[in-house]
Length: 244
Image (cartoon, rainbow, N blue to C red; front, side, top):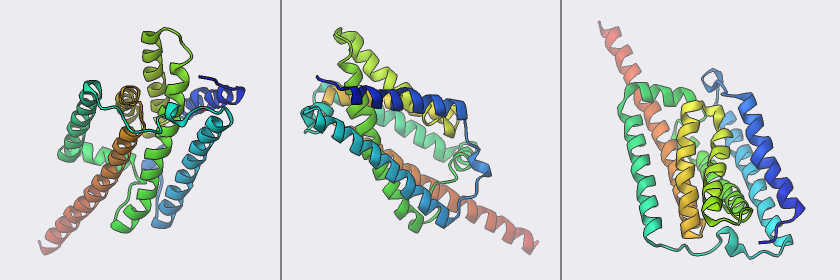
């Protein structure tokens, strides 16, 4: 695999500069931020646009180096037993996490407070879907298609190359999401470990993109439903107190 100076510069930016900046900035107190509908719409499209820039850069780097796009996962996935095992592990882990978030009241409040940018109604969900699809496609192209592939081919030993190519991008991906808090960043890191493993064994971006989009969209829908349910409960309590 032939990597150019431009690949190394891009790796330096996304593999070192961005995570260090994110760690230095730390968690953003999203609870204190007010996201009105117009603000959320701008947030969704602005961040989605930035993600597409990253994906375009990866394709440009691949094009100028004349590397086959299959090498970054633009092909139909291999579906062997390893892929199914790690895919099942990802789905089970996410299911457990999703159930705990929707059942436990303290987890509901924590989710809503830490993700004030989540949609509150179907109109916001429609705009949010652009961000969800952009993140699912573009982040997988950058962090799996480019970063995993780049690291995998930097080490000659197949065992070490596998571990470095899976673990390091997962840590980087978790670091750039530290603005959500330590716990969410750790969860994202674990999910990223599984996504990186699935990508390597399937040799394709298709499965990880579908999983990523699904997780983001489900998160948006859950956040919307939680908010509306809590709003209904508050209104019901206020109505009952007024009757008394």
